[in-house]
Image 1 (cartoon, rainbow, N blue to C red):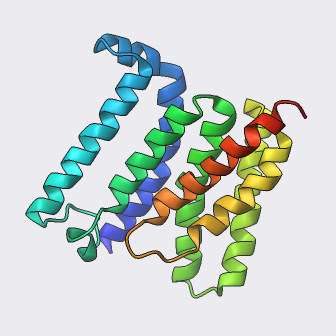
Image 2 (image 1 turned 90 degrees about the vertical axis):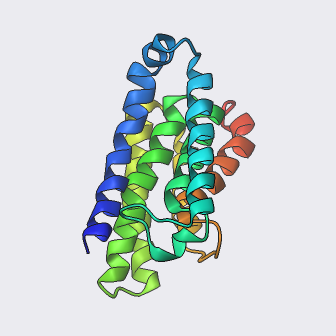
Image 3 (image 1 turned 180 degrees about the vertical axis):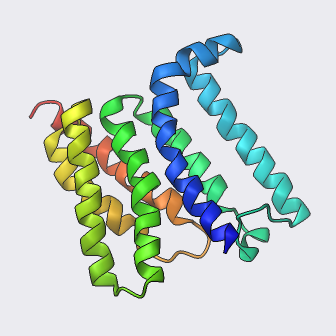
Length: 190
């Protein structure tokens, strides 16, 4: 049970990542002699090496599920996906809604499922929450309204496939990120 609570709190804590990136990222990176992109890429590389070592040793760390001792963990998938978000869309307009969707949407959906709600209800409530996140980002960070309307439900549906080796921490960011990259040429002219 404490591992479950830790995972939920860890997800919620991800909401500070865009704040750190946009408010302090340049000065933090500069303090270690790197550009912001180099710092983000370095964190992803260190996470990947750490994950490879963890897998080689076959261990789990606190909060991980037992099956993660033999496959890439949710934490590693999340680190990769968040890194790709910052490297691919280094603007508040997209980074905030994507990462806030993962921080709040994923645990929200998980808790609804734990309480026995059927998939249709989980998806409906999650779409409302995630659309609210994207609309708030439209208001505060100039996220294109059309992107909010299109990408929010895609982010929710990106969490639903139960893939054996790719965690939903990755799919909830990488699938919407791909949609944004594809739509971006059209969103700038609308």
